[in-house]
Image (cartoon, rainbow, N blue to C red):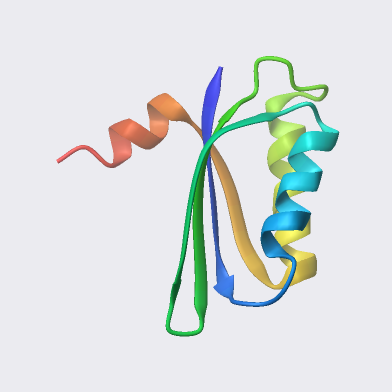
Amino acid sequence: MRAIVTVIGKDRVGIIARVCTLLSGQNVNILDISQTILQEYFTMTMLVDTSKCSVPFDTLAELLSKLGEDMELSIRIQHEEIFEAMHRI
């Protein structure tokens, strides 16, 4: 199953490393990644494969959310189908 991870917040060293480390630790494969800096704000969108994830999807979402709180970022994960439905024009 594929999902979309979004990360938004003030730019700082280590954001990509910490998010990728968390995902790797749960056996989540990163399929595609896009990141940019808008003035001082960091934004990243990742397409990930959660089919071999070692924890339930809800637990993964909680782990990402907690990491976001710790880093003062917004980190969310959504099933790919939900993300696409929300962003269709």
